[in-house]
Length: 216
Image (cartoon, rainbow, N blue to C red; front, side):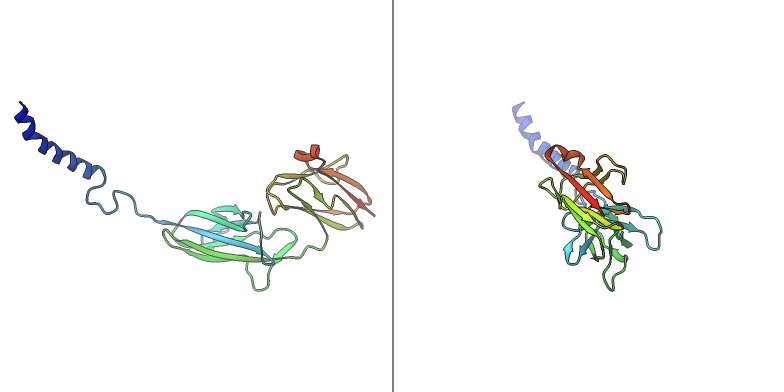
C-alpha cells in the first residue's frame, strides 16, 4: 500500500499543478480579463490663476445638447470623469453668476480619451462681480458679519471652507434659505428695498454665525 501511494503522489502533484495553471488563466496573457476600453477625463478650472472649487463641469458626446454626466470641481479646482469610453468627447464648464470666461477661452472643449489614460483640459474664469462679498469661513463666521450698502447693490456670499453653511433669513422674507455646501459655492442677492436684514447659518447659529445687511 505504501509503495502504491509513493507511485501515484508524483502524478497527483502534476495534476494539481495543471489545475492551478488553468484556474489562474493558463497561457492566456490577459488572464481571462477583458481588455481595458475606458480612460479618464480631468478638467481644471481656475479663477484668475487660483483653483476654483464648486464649479459644475459637464461631459458631452460630440455635438450633444444633453450631458452624459456632471461633476463639480473639488477644492483643488479639478473635476474628474472616470470610466469614460475611449473616443472623442466634449467638456463644458458652467459659468457661475458673477464670473465670465477669460479672454480667448471657450466654455466647451474637445478631448480624446485613450484607454487606460487621462485626457486633460482646463478653463480659466475671471471674477466680474460688481457688488459686495461676504465669506462664510471655517471659523464659523460670516466675514464681514455686518455690511452697509446702497439700495440696488448685490451681495455675494461665498463658502471659503469645507464646511456646509446656509444663508438663512432671520425674521424677513427678502430671500429664501440658500445653501452654500462646498468650498467655492456662492449665493447672490440684490437688495432693492432699504431696511435691515439679519440672517444666520442654520447649522452654526448656536456658535454665533450670524450677519446683518443694512440697506440705505
